[in-house]
Image 1 (spheres, rainbow, N blue to C red):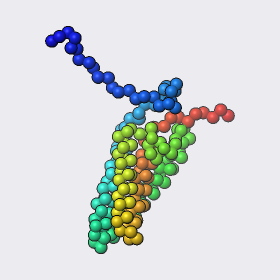
Image 2 (cartoon, rainbow, N blue to C red):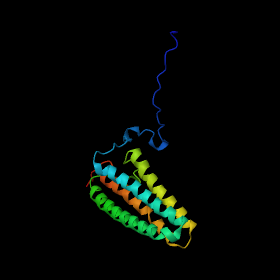
Image 3 (cartoon, rainbow, N blue to C red):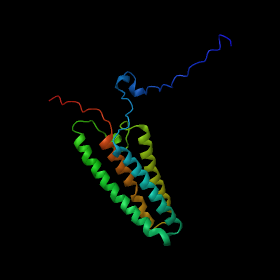
Image 4 (cartoon, rainbow, N blue to C red):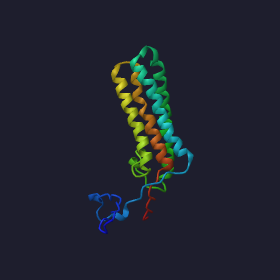
Amino acid sequence: MASGSAKKTKLPKQRAVPAHRVGREHEVRPEPSMPEAPAATRIIWASIAGTVVFAATAIPAAIAPDAFVGVAVLVSLVLFLLGTLAFLWAYAVAVGRSRTDLMGIGGLFFLAGSAPRLVQRRLIASLVAEIVIAGVTASTRVYTPLAFGVLVPMYGLGLMGLWGAKFGTFPPRPLDPA
């Protein structure tokens, strides 16, 4: 082997600092880590499971409405109700945490900067899948009970908010100067 053929080590790619952060790099928070609480994982899997159940009932109902529309409407209404309850629960938890933590809507309900990227991707993917399935199935049979499917994304949004409220990492609220 020649002495000049030393292997180059590949360094991890560094992200460019956004223009609005130049000079304020020290303020960038590290990515949050996954909480060890089993409930954090259960919320993610509940969101995915609800989306799968919705797809498994709404798609057949769009294809053969006479046979499946009753089940699809029932599933849509149950998921909407569960999503609404999760949303209200998330709001109540967030109100309590907001006394000590600086929380924003983007971090709370869309997990921007408050959750690990894997968690954020899974929950947002579940929400987006619910929106797409609801839009496609409701538009295939216009003016039918399949329109109840547009209520289902409340389930994904409520669970994202619940995850953010219970397990999201937020910076501490600054002390009041008064």
